[in-house]
Image (cartoon, rainbow over all chains, first blue to last red; front, top):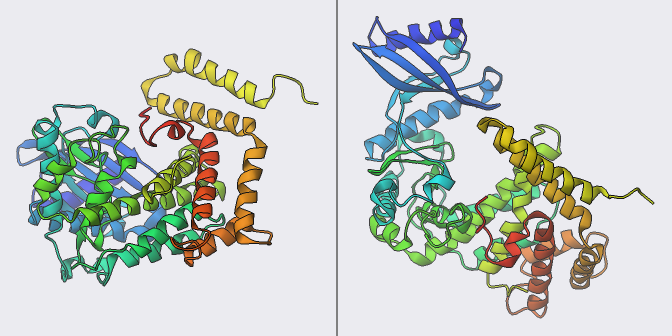
Length: 330
Length: 124
């Protein structure tokens, strides 16, 4: 963060916090991509040093400034519902202060990296306790239901989340060039087996190992709210349980972390058949995202080896989609 | 025609150098990128070695299901979406088998470990 920007943010934070002596004494870029930046900032505030995170967009991407404000309001709603999230502190929607809107939240300690999380027997008090805790977090997220004027940016809830999902995936495939018969096969299977519509709840839509900050006591933060939407809560359970998000630890069906039964027990009132439907949907969704990511590389708009390699996850997902729909393996 | 070793063999040799000689000397922050490079080289080498007959066979099986036309995969995808190969249709089992062969052929290049057992088992 250059001096000028840091001074502008500091001045704004003094006003927002009502502390004229507030001072930013350290700022380190945690992660910066083409779109977002996350800064770890240490702040002297009312006599103590506080650890915060400043989340913003690059100035070049002002068109997507709404998501930061939206994410802040989602954090507020989640916190009010008892979900463990980084405490949202301040939102600055004025792009002239730092070049783009930003918000500040409390910094959370813990481990999120998937491959480390699934290997640990100790995180969250052990696998069973942690899977239960994840079920409880999801239940709290799903206690948020429309209508919610504070979350108006989410739009109207779909009348039938399952059929809306199928339509959205097909539309995404139609935007790409290569035909995807195996993914179509999975979608058609979903269409035949679609569960009856249920009342809409807030779904996180990326609640999986890797986006969950954990320590030995439990969940320290549910992160990455940018895909949240109104939908069927079973979608979140299916996404978490999908084999492709178990980071290789297939025996622990809840995200490679713990037993499925413990997750369900923590959540309470799970329709297992519906979760299984959304688990197949999860593999399809990830395959379609991977196709889109590779296309960003292939088209030349964003040459990037990681995006390119993501495309090569698609065949493996296709194989699993076919197996899940009962196609005999050769 | 081309000089030996061929492209696939060169990629494999170069990948060995990258992983065994260079990677241990890289700072932690660059190792992820180096592993991605190694992964890309492995995929490219497998693609170069893939049996062309296998692909042709897969496509011929698809073409047999969709009938004449110059874009059998697109026709196949469209027919699946429309329910043309649903359970209970005459070609359901043949379509399922063709899809499985195709997916397996694609995994031979992109994710060979997925063929042996369940996908997603390998945590690299």
